[in-house]
Length: 72
Image (cartoon, rainbow, N blue to C red; front, side, top):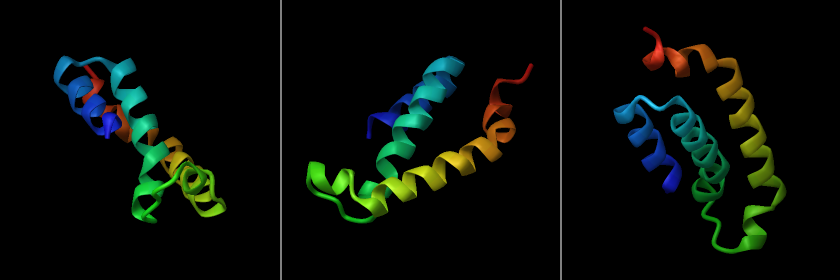
């Protein structure tokens, strides 16, 4: 889970680009992991893609809250 690591490093170093990339990577893989995907084909299944799309929309809706750690 490179995304989770990038989120943590982004928060510690106060790097918003790294934090944002980490969130994107994490969201891209989260549904795949939750559904127990094992193969490349599982990563592009309808359930995995739909879950990723939903999570991206949720992240967009809560973008202000996600960016709050970087406010001065």
